[in-house]
Image (cartoon, rainbow, N blue to C red; front, side, top):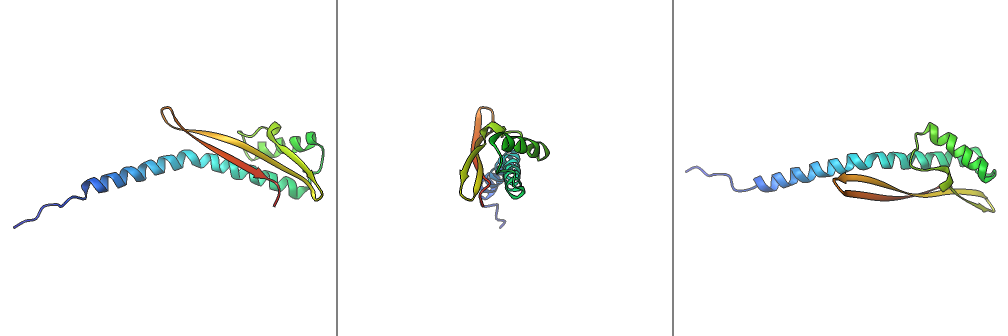
Length: 117
């Protein structure tokens, strides 16, 4: 007597759909995280070069130059917050990124980056 398949087809199908959906979301979110790391790298390199100790205008100008090289588009220099402390200036920025997923469904990611170690 021959035995037929005993389920598993629906489970396998749902697992494949879940993996495909996760891959699509990952591909849409990946550029936002690339930009986050570019902003982080920009602020850290500014701090290492001593460009965070000037005036607010100088700091914004230095950020704009470095952001252009690092292809940062979602963070304008007027969103930079500069805090003067005993150890020098700390430049930080908080910014949201909206990622459209499907139709009218969007994912909002809030990033917070600082030049402090």
